Image 1 (cartoon, rainbow, N blue to C red):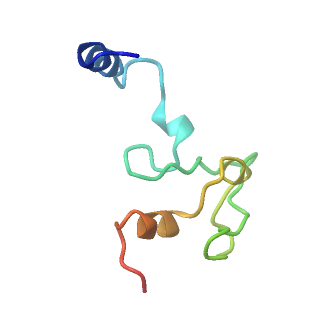
Image 2: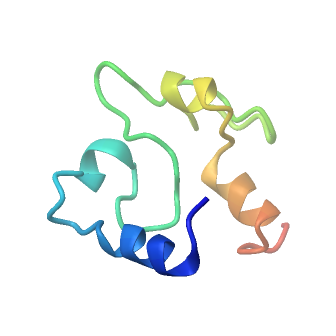
Length: 82
């Protein structure tokens, strides 16, 4: 287990220049969404398992157990229910 100093050094070791390209992993690279980006090989064609809205998730999103951004935002208190 890391102490506070080690944890801080570990966190500081990551930067946008570390070879990790947010655009390749996140649909909204600098936002708060964790959804995968849609692409020809990973289209957004699946409904959200929570609200049932069509075309909200990709196969990778489903495999990760995600729900759509609207439902996630609502669950996290970022949006008020309609």
